[in-house]
Length: 123
Length: 110
Image 1 (cartoon, rainbow over the protein chains, first blue to last red):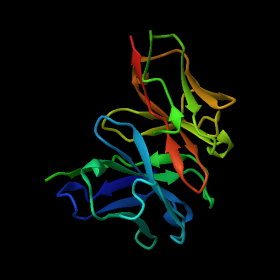
Image 2: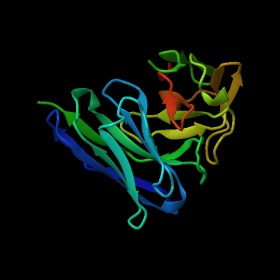
Image 3: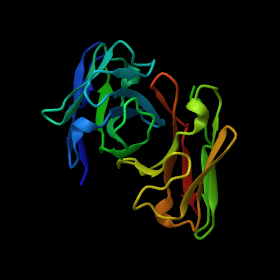
């Protein structure tokens, strides 16, 4: 069965960096675009970024464009989110999610999600 | 500000039907044909319940249905059950390969 397991969250000071990972299993990872979505405490879901199946194309929400970089290593079935210059309002649970169909460009829904990893930015 | 507006809360008694609306407030939501809905219980992974406006994924209860009229999409839960109590989010593809989520609706089973 499809499994997505995020890791790398923690408490970090403003201005510092953190890299999140998402280990995928149960499907052919290299076929599918992948997303990062976050949820700040007490807030709704916010789409963060998408990466194409081969890593050649990446798109970001305006709120993270610049400091955040999405990448993937298909040989390791792992998705990454490098977060630089973190701000207090980046505090959130970060989820990775799989695109439903193997198509790029993708307009499709997210059919499997991980349980999320918490990132707290605080001094 | 989200481009997709949902009511903050909707409630119903067991066995009743409820409908959650999702209204697009900006024009660039990709023709609004790629609307999906997610059920989210706190502390758990969100679950896809509807995609492409009205298609139910395999394994999702037939009590969930989706529709769209103009710039408003809707999720209907019929035969409401206690396990349906959760937050629900609509989502849509936007232009330029980006996505947007709705503001979220808390469903309470009375």
